[in-house]
Amino acid sequence: MKYLLGYDIGSSSIKVALLSVDTGKCVASVTSPKKEMEIAAEVAGWAEQRPERWWQEVVNATRELKSEYGFDASLVAGIGITYQMHGLVLLDKDGKVLRPAIIWCDSRAVDFGNQAFAEMGEEYCLQNFLNSPGNFTASKLKWVKENEPAIYEQIYKIQLPGDYIAYQLTGQMQTTVSGLSEGVFWNFREQRIAQELLDYYGISRDLLPDIIDTFAPQGQLTPEAALELGLHAGTPISYRAGDQPNNAFSLNVLQPGEIAATAGTSGVVYGITDGPASDPHSRVNAFAHVNSTPEQPRNGVLMCMNGTGILNSWLRKIVGEMPYDEMNQLAAQAPIGSEGLLFLPFGNGAERILENRPTEAELRGLSFNIHSQAHVLRAAQEGIVFALNYGMDIMRSMGVQVQKVRAGNTNMFLSPVFREAFVNTGNVTLELYNTDAAQGAARGAGIGVGVYASPAEAFGSLERILTLEPTPELQTQYQTAYARWHQALTQQILSHTTTQTDVVQHAF
Image (cartoon, rainbow, N blue to C red; front, side, top):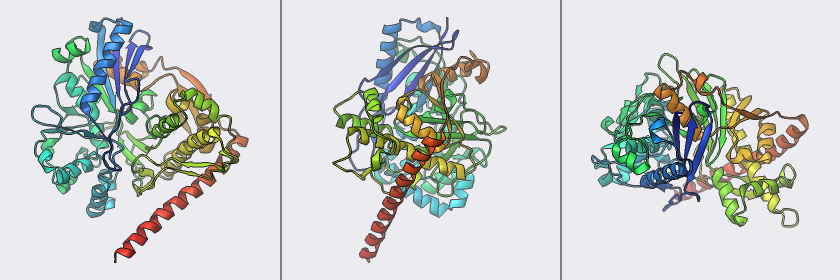
């Protein structure tokens, strides 16, 4: 029997899955640590983690997997990696980490990206990069250049989080086109490095790693890493992709018109197109999908809502560490619309769907005589769904047809309230599959190493476990609640806009 290993490098935890090549089924998986990893925020809007911690949890998870399942490491045919997108890891010439990673939900680089968008030209950026430079990796690197010049001068190569883990495994500093595109380092029109943005920021191209294919042997497990992990030296690393392209891949979402969603740490809807697509306000973003080639481009249009899992996690602390399934049961006791209670779930950094405006989480309409824990929990789940639908409406305005959505049966999609609200608010069909990101990375490794001849073979055993359709009565109730939520969001945006205008006027 041969196996495939898949690693999911998240900001909350590291997960490793062991897949049987013969059956295509996950035979074992481990998550480490058991409690969520910390995110440091020394300044409001910042978010940092130590890459060394990610690696230590990779080691811990792998050792636990070996201990519990006892598989023969020499039978592992390939290793795949998926990772939290948009992070910035800085390495010196000796491969040492220079500072904590600036991760995906960090907002410090917004002003640099907005200035680049204005001065380089919005039309130019959208036509060539499909995005504003915004708060993405290139802009984070510019922040380091301007604010930490002593560190910047020591940089040998930058890495995305998954690139860093691959480097720990292989000793090779590399990245992919998909990875470069997620950092706005890629020119889609000319299919090359975005030299124009590098020049604007004064960043040397030499800081970017070598480019390798997404599905291909990308290096081999070094003896040192193999010893630390308890694996077999020489095992090929044969796939890597950011978490959202990989989530889509794990659901066999590869062709134009197919849609994937996830509701873990962040909430995402991700749709495939075969041509350039951009939002004039860069509220949703396009990246090169895992199977994109110059001859057959495949781009993923992604809307992301930061305040998803972190809101659910925060509520869990507030209600006394109640298990998530009990929280879901309690939320179901409140009626649709939570009797007027509204949650605006924007409390985890700058939200792209709101054009990176200053926002915060907000609970509206609270009545001490009416509302209970159940109402608050339900309002939070509905608020996350409503924010996702707000983003899906932007995608629809770009021509992305959001009609049938695939998701893994995990995270917030385990909640019946969340599923029902998602289907009926968005008027979409939802298909849930028995898979997750780590399993997707393992299947990708199988394609990359040639164990599977094609995605069709890799996903032959993918199991659909539930299909949900909207119903007219529930649609009416949820869309009425969404309209109230949308009005509250509009009021919050106008309030912030007015406040900012007042500040500017008083300054003069």
